Length: 331
Image (cartoon, rainbow, N blue to C red; front, side, top):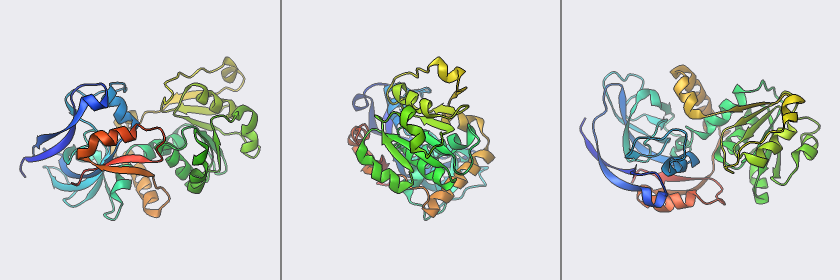
């Protein structure tokens, strides 16, 4: 094993992505004990990546830093003490620094997938799908036939929720900003899709066939979150995992007093830090199985080579996207 030269997206200061991040050459040393060198295949640009670049995320790296918090690749070589992975294994990368031609990662931060897994789908498996699965299973006791309501239903998490919920026998009431998204989400398995203008307090129960959702998933905040809370069944739970509107939750006292709603937050980074290898392995095994069976597929809007990073970041920031922008790191 030797030191190799790689290209990587390096953040030197927090701020406007156009001024703060650029592709640079680096020297990557051999993997240390317990580490694995991965030749990266692809990595998505997630909202959290943009927030980190801007300096607006809950946990920021020391600078300079290579950006990107998930991806896929192939094991090139292993350090001392690594027994679970071998050169040639295809893996999902579950750590920061993925916008690079190669990286060294602790073996515990990698999950092996079948060699015929689409590298673009594998690259998107580390953040949005586990967020969806864990929120569906961790906050409410749901049974087949129950309803879940969510906003930002066209996001990566939202699309994952629709498909994973369907595999669990759950129904979904989905809120989007643009009416033209409805057919696509219904094709994924969404039961009902409405736009933000729909008053769920007035119409939600009818939309759910007389039932009320017991779980709401909020990625927007502000008035959109209140709309979700208003349709919840008494004793229901609203989980916030994003704040796309940059507006706080304003919850009327009546929803707490008379409906006894619970309001929680979810951050995948915390789950990764607090969970053990067995729990993480179980989650990603289930997700890999869904991807392999075709039961979970995430939309790809565009793929750019790493050297086209500026254009990729600009495209990822567009509000009219219908899928992820990914970096092809194999060039």
